[in-house]
Image (cartoon, rainbow, N blue to C red; front, top):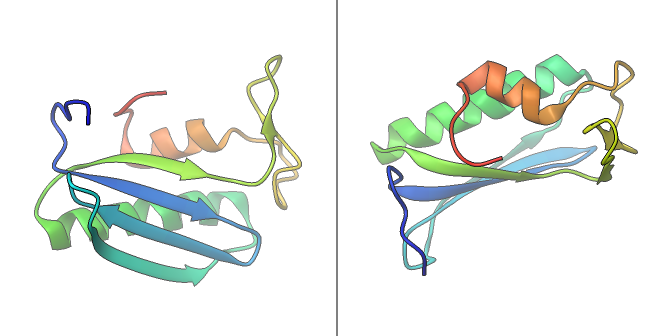
Length: 108
């Protein structure tokens, strides 16, 4: 496995139309924490919810995780926005919203 500079564990978020799930994995791939909540209907509420879940897991784990998330749809190479993104009328960028909510860290 590659090196993990500045990260204690990995965090994955699955943002779906009905549920948002977060999981933390150790360096050796063991599941350390998992949590699922209903997905809010509004974009900003979803971003705030994901940021809150990340903060909560990092506090519980007493560390900092690298974060990746999966969402339904395809990223447009032209706009950088997600096509077919759930209920996001303003066509906002999930990546930009996440970075505003938790700060720009990790890889793009």
